[in-house]
Amino acid sequence: MLARLTLSLALLGALVPSAGAQQVRRLFISADMEGVAGVVTAEQLGPGGFEYERFRRFMTDEVLAVIGAARAAGVREFVVGDAHGNGQNLLLELFPPDVQVVRAWPRPLGMMQGIDSTFDAAVFLGYHAGTTNPAGVRAHTFSSARLTDVRLDGRSVPEGGVNAAIAGHYGVPVILVTGDDAAVAEVRHVVGDIEGAVVKWNYGFHSARTLTPQAAAQLIGERTRSALQRRAAFRPVQLGQPVTLEVRFKHYQPAQVLALLPIVEQVDAHSIRYVGADILAVSRFLTFINNYEVGLEP
Image (tube, rainbow, N blue to C red; front, side, top):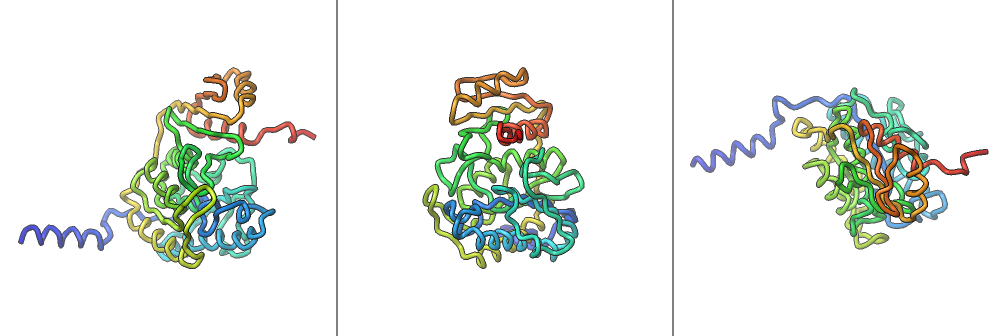
């Protein structure tokens, strides 16, 4: 009898919102594209791909699914970071007039530009696995062409790991990640037991079994509602200070040239180490190494 009573109370607790649940009023959404339902190759990911224009709409619809579910749950303010490719993918005209969108590059906080301590929660939408992960559609960390590893305080992290630490600097927890099965598992391993919406299952770097866009949007809306109901259970990812960043390049020259800076140590032929005062300084340094090129000069 006692066992049945305990079970009933546990089920009741799962169904009734906690009295200590925190109300989310401001939500930050960092939106990438590799983890959007149906995306498998470059044909969906950039202006040169024959499916890109359609998939811009699908990406936008997934963001709108988060916004719609969150608004119904009481969220009143939204900032969306367009965090893929050229940073100009989301279809602005489809968003409600009270949603703000961060676009284009470079920006000091990268994929998290726009977040600050006034936000109550963050969502990672359309994310992919990191460059050291042998699984995942289009798995990479910030640059598939240049980088083979990114480490924070000695630990390899995907983009979601860096971005969660940036949110955590401001005391903001990540509550939901969407993407393929490898990406969702990896971000949850780094960030914690947050909600996850798996919209496709990877077979390789360029292949997957996927939900339809409509089914993906529905799932993302459901997971958004669950994440907001569990908000009080999530904690920000907060690193100590200073923060040590290690970056490994595919080629040796970037490591050699960056090591000419007194703030950079060359670890080996392909790797460098930088110690930043905090994760924001690390983010600025990552922005520099991923954006500076001689072609910027007239």
